[in-house]
Image (cartoon, rainbow, N blue to C red; front, top):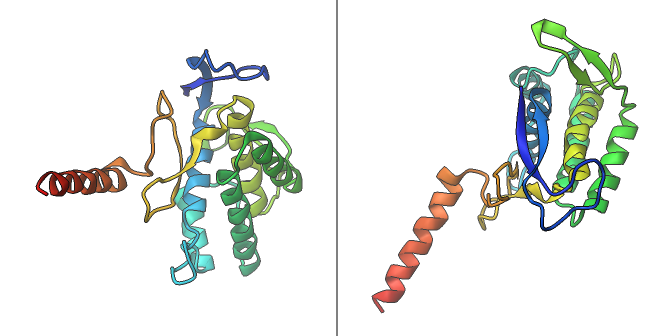
Length: 209
């Protein structure tokens, strides 16, 4: 299954600001990788007082199961430390000020992971591409597959879709898949609604003098 995504660029040509409705196809495995990298980045504590969303190996194992990350062996403290380091590097991609910076960061991620593309139809899934090398650690697995998923956005001229929530008290990462790049919040039902209610109350208060 593939999802169409409006794009400003296809096939490596420079982005055309007048053509915002071209199509990039997001395959099921790419979408899964995007969901995984967003959830991974959002496990990071927002400040020194906040709890880490990956506090121990057991939580990392639960993350692996929940995201159906395949070919992962017994996890260790070394894996936990390595995944946290990869998490910080992915967070930097979401904070990149431009496509060139994001491209450099992604290149370093996928190169260090020893990326080895191969087709697979494991566990009853249709044919899809794995980018991690056979026997790779979970950190290298995430760096390769999630890094390539983000790379597709840079290639398509869509790096701006890799965003942080604009709510002042929330900096969660998300990928904006809206048709006109209009999504501003990680969750419109929480952060979005909360800010809309606050703005409405502020207007009411100002109108009342």
